[in-house]
Length: 200
Image (tube, rainbow, N blue to C red):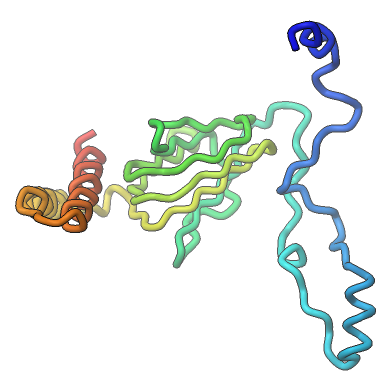
């Protein structure tokens, strides 16, 4: 193993052909001609069904130089907060800690915990409180942020947060079953994160 290490290190890191990413799509949709022919034999008057690839837009190619902006898509189950928005940086509350994402960030997938998502655009910073979700950072400086719930931090009522934190703390102290304890602990965690978002 170690004998081969020196030969492996001498190899060029990037070959003539670069590895394709799962987000790279062909410029034109590719149809499975065998399937289409079989479909036309069975049902000649009905168009063949489309596959998920037919609905996807091709991502821009991975840049050879470091881009100046990060393209962010921030979606919720019921709304799209940001769509292809070009920003300088985002800071997401990953389960491993706060994670700053700049243009040219290495491709990453991270789980999100309750906390503040900051979107930096020049001197403007927009903050959202998110409950949970995932962030997908692509090698072409595109970040897809998917959250279960989100609200702008300036729309959070501090009094309701304090009241909710007290209620869930009491529920946690009086819980008798594992389910009650788990539900109360989630409430305490979310309201503590809300409280930190407002005070920090």
